[in-house]
Length: 358
Image (cartoon, rainbow, N blue to C red; front, side, top):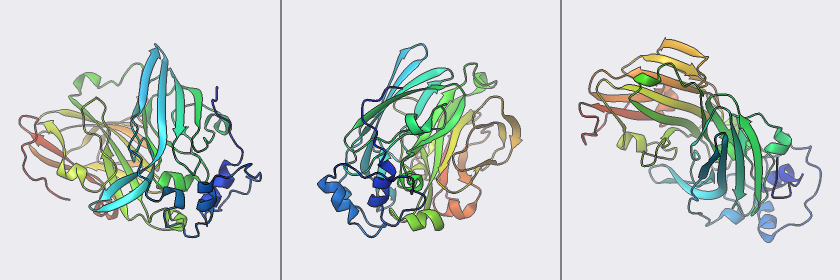
């Protein structure tokens, strides 16, 4: 592992001071920062966790595009940016999210089984350290997932030797606050020998489920219930839909397929707290690969249970035209927004007609 920045042992302590009332289990961070910026000192004066901390007030950083480049047969460079960006999670409701690359969930990362990921994290947050925890890799968390201080950069390397659909998230303490505020996403590791059903697939989509709570409120993150549970889609190819986690986009602008298509969805529940009961109304899941691993093959399921961070590859056929709601069958969460629409037409193009609710 190579690091281009000093990794300070005070990351946990600094995060706690920035999130008053979030002391939790952070007693291990005992050292004191050598120097405080004016922004950090101001943030430490914040007394209510449900308010925007002082350095974030008025801050809405334009999304910085992710950079991904294959540099060899088994080497991929990935550069991501931690930043503060406003996200509309419901009509007219703006959440000043802590994000990767201005998206929540963050941008999709796709690599191949056996690749080494050379990962760089730039931290544009003026006040809070951030980090990256990839569930898809073998690593030493204390070193390879180390926190990057504000306005600094860190570089790490690790192998992705297991195929599947995995969560990634900020791992800086308190982890719950960083994930709940928006620092989560999905990494797909494509199996080197593919899936047994590859030749029959007509269309592929990515769906991610996440939750939103009271803004930056650690008590609500830990003890409350989500105000919104939502789906987003991420583009597998340039030009495909790429959305944030909100209650409305995938209803107003549905995914589209053609009658008879065999559909594959890479699905990930990034939580941070709730289970997803993933279900497609109007069809049966012909093939399911739990966590996206070809070895975990199930057939003929109605619903797939996804724990927080859990992923899957699900495949099904759409036999008739119409609107197919995609939901979590925990309907209290569907009521809070966790519904996407797959519109199926004779041509495979959106006919412009209104979609149904659910």
